Every structure is written in C-alpha cells, then in structure tokens.
Length: 246
Image 1 (cartoon, helix red, strand yellow):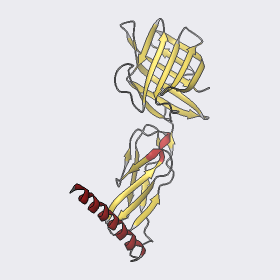
Image 2 (tube, helix red, strand yellow; image 1 turned 45 degrees about the horizontal axis):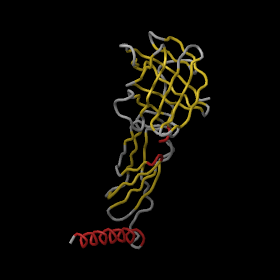
Image 3 (cartoon, rainbow, N blue to C red; image 1 turned 90 degrees about the vertical axis):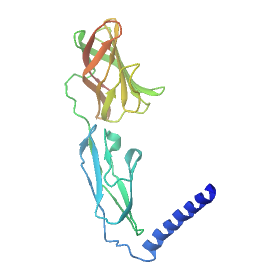
Image 4 (cartoon, rainbow, N blue to C red; image 1 turned 180 degrees about the vertical axis):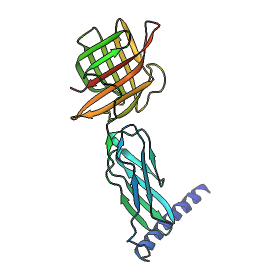
C-alpha cells in the first residue's frame, strides 16, 4: 500500500511540474515584465546579522534562495546571523507562483567588512593581567593540523607560548568567533580554544570573543579582556592578544 502511495505522490509532483511548465511556456500567461524587488542591509560587519527580502510578486507558491557559502532558504525574508566574509557576494532567488510562473532575480554583491576590535595592541603582542603585562611573540605559524586550524607563537620577551585553535582545518574567514573553555562547553564551527603558557602555568581562555580580520591578505587574530583561568593556581584573570599572519 505504501509503495502505491509513493508512486501516486511522485506522479502528482511530476504533473504539477508539467502544469507549471505548460502555464509558463504554452499558455503564455506569465507577465515577463515583472521583476521581483530584492533588498539587503549591506554593507554589514562580520559578526552582525544579514537581512534579505524579496517582494513584488503575488500569489506565491515558493521562494528558493541560494547564494555564497552554500546558503539556501525558502523564506521570503531570510535572516543570517553571525556572518563572516564567506557570506559576501550575490544572493539569487526564484519566486514561483501558484500559476507556475518563475521569476528570478539577484541582489547586488553583499559587502562584509572586518570586525572592529575594541582594544589596541601592537602586532604579535599579548598580556595577562596581573601576571605578564607585556609579551612580544615571534616565530608565528598559521596553518591546519589534524582537524583544526592553529596559530602558534613563542614570546621573545618572556618564557611564554600561545596557541589559538579554531574548529575545522579551513582558513578562518573574517568574523567574530566564540572562545570555549578547554575540556568543557561546546566545540563546533565558529568555536576557538585559547591556551597561554606563562609564569609556570597554563592559562585557558573563555568564554569570550575572538576577532578575525584580513589586512593586506593576512589574517589578524585578536581578543580583548578574554577571561583566563590557571590550571595550577586558584587564580582567574583576563588577557588580550593580537597575532598577525607572517
């Protein structure tokens, strides 16, 4: 019985598809002068929300949006939160009416700017409040390792190391990321683990915010007043850093 129902459903969808095609191509009832109106709130800053909308077509059966970074939606006004530079570009939409007419249009290219960092540090500098006020780093490496993307650095000015680990081994896009405490919390796309080694202790960052910008085609990764916890002392503090890709 279920197999017969499945066959009927497939035939129904096929007939519906033929009806749309006939309505558009043979009955010639689609007004080709109509162009849907699309709007966005571009330009936007990485980490913000991107708003899309389409209007101007009545009797709508379906919206079919598609665009950068694998985006797709069937909403008339999609909302994309926590965007990165990977969301930049044009968004296309097909508006399909109940009569079978298909109207297609696209947005202007959406511009996604780099996030504004709230503190100012010299390149490759970090500080841990109450522990190490000024650390300058060299020998930086940026790249994938296993299933993560790592930034690793050694301090010139003190016996200290830093490691920033992004979820996934792809190059991080410009945007705002969430630092998660090592060994706890979630660990998924958009998350970061932060570890400093200084003053005979490991310092783990989070929860907090990490900013990724692209300057002269180089990644700039920074954070301001990131909560840090020592794994050897009963001491919590905050730290800031800025690392630039060599």
